[in-house]
Image 1: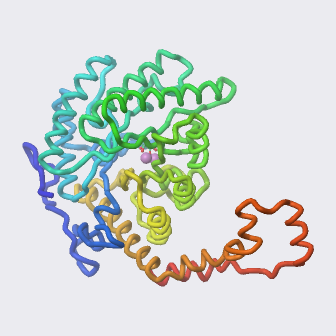
Image 2: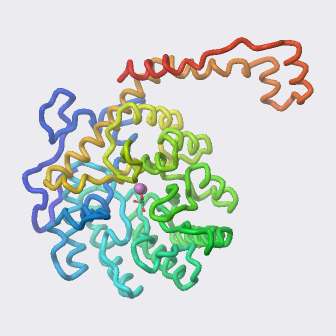
Image 3: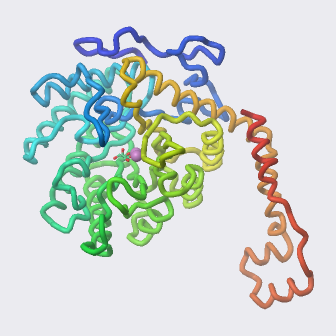
Length: 442
Ligand code: XLS
Ligand code: NI
Ligand code: NI
């Protein structure tokens, strides 16, 4: 991928980020992410399918609940919204090609600001879609997924698809239609629904059943429209338990899978799992991956991390090798991500204000994930990890255990067997041994 510049260079002083190996002292080089290196039959690039998140990386202002903007961008200066959006697209593709990510992801509103006029907005997003299409063609970078921002505008304060006012739901539908049009025109490989305001603040004013039915109906309309218009990719739902609403309907992977099954949406949807959303739900990231993988619905990942001390959705860049090694074992066991990739839904801290900080953030994230892939591959090659897990269930592999799994035993049969065989011997779960085994390969 060659660097793609617009009229001016925004990230001056930083060139293309290259792989230099673990020993390099160059902070603007990859130590582990070597895109063409083959691991377990595929290149790193094919395994990981890294994506840059338009919203954090090119729009994030550094705002927090106690203070305003700390991050100011030269591509955010023009007064005309379309001209400003084109500058941002220039900056985005300069960064994407310098960092060497094969993909990017966006919300409609990241690409161009919207006014309060649906037809005007349609014109704006179409203009930017054409602009981005050219950028994609010139650079080779692709759209991993598109989505609609149905949570920032004040009209969505009581929900978007689940809003008690149908008039608001029509605006959600309009935005989804336009975001789908953009995604399809750009050859986007997937489309995401994150239900930031699809939930409630208090049950005192909420008909939860009706709201969830409205949500399912909106998803069905989106699928029907997209399929009619040639979209062949996957739809993803991104679970998150809370924030911004007190309770969100897409609470966690297990909840979303139940919802998809209930509304007969399993053929078109799978899951986009985010590390920090898992931890907000009281799970590990690995737990969420495993739940999705077991259901055959492991679609894509939003990579980031929370803060161990305060439990907020801090969206920091990933840097925990132990966590990512365990995650990668689950992903590899599942045969990889079905259609998705690894999107950095992560932001540098609001006081990381140098141009280089954007690069350090992504280099660190890409390196820790690449390194985890290498470690997980070594663990799999070694074989002991899988053997220990498999052997743990050996009593179901033959004899009466196998008959139970097949459904050939009754409850009375279990009574008989327990009575005949007496108290079972204790069997160690060997957790510490396994933790040491993982560490051995790190
Ligand atoms: C917010 C979500 C959001 C989605 C896309 O917490 O992670 O960024 O990924 O709407
Ligand atoms: Ni998030
Ligand atoms: Ni996300």
